View 1 (cartoon, rainbow, N blue to C red):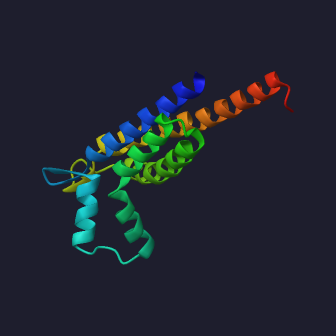
View 2 (cartoon, rainbow, N blue to C red):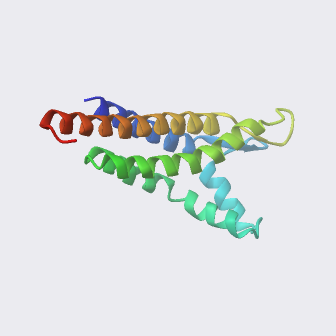
Length: 153
């Protein structure tokens, strides 16, 4: 039972992280932009030639799809696989969101970071990681308990 509750909290954390990725992340003038709009602008204006950054931007676009896949794995009972995907995705997304959240913005300046999206996404990824790791630990403890009850060492 605890494994299912923790897997559900991991899934809820991923949902919160994805919702946060669609909220406002940056402001330019009076226009607020989501993380996906910013990624599109960086790509459109070719603002980076760093291969790692370009790859990260490409992966960012499929974050909702990857989150849905992780949630499906957790729901279908593939706890370890779902948790592994959840943790990897949450580290990637949470790191980007955390960096954006701590940058803050100059409220008086023409360009800035808006905290709604990055903070929501960061909280979601933290919940997802805690839930995923907890689900794996409780699932492993449950397997050990079943083996002990059967007399298997």
